[in-house]
Length: 260
Image (cartoon, rainbow, N blue to C red; front, side, top):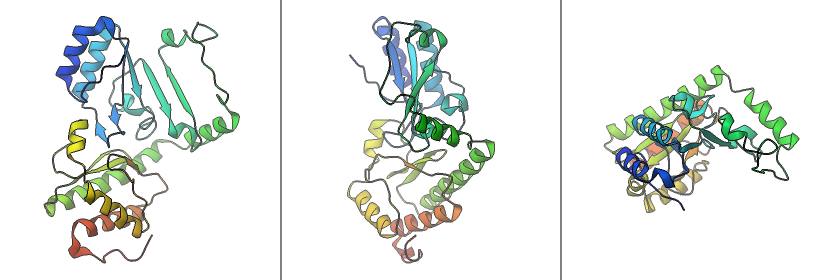
């Protein structure tokens, strides 16, 4: 059985774990959510989560499939100094090839075969081509890489949010490093309920087609995250910003020329 708790609600989290800890084996979450748009786990929420799970011997699992190696070489857990017991990884570690991985505390991992009784295997586990691609990609992720990409993305998010503020537009860009999502309200989004309230609906659909006509493939679903890579230049992001501003301020229509 699974208990679903509201994201970023420390009081409900603590109350639930304190009352039902004997029946709870583990807690799994994205420390920065990407599957309801970008929502950063509040540091106090993650701190309490770590403290209560450790107190009761509950295994804490971070799903860093999206955030692993995204903005920091150690993921969110290193960036924000919250250490889980197990971590799930994927996406980036395969450099575009399909791959998944998990790891964590030695005493837990020793339960896996051949050391322990938990058998885990797969037809394509450790495929040499994927492993070679992953290693080659990860070798490129140095300090210069993160500094350049994060700076470029922070400037883009900051510029767009300043535009929304200046034009009094009910929208904002949420972001963590190169992960971003557009919210159709000014207030911050802290959980799934907020994310639903901040959807654009038909307006989002019109934005999708507006950007597609400009040569930009935007996420087709309102609660999807979009990602910026190191191959996206400042010129690319400036063009995206121009197209977004055109949509939200019709007076600027025509400022972006042609398609990218």
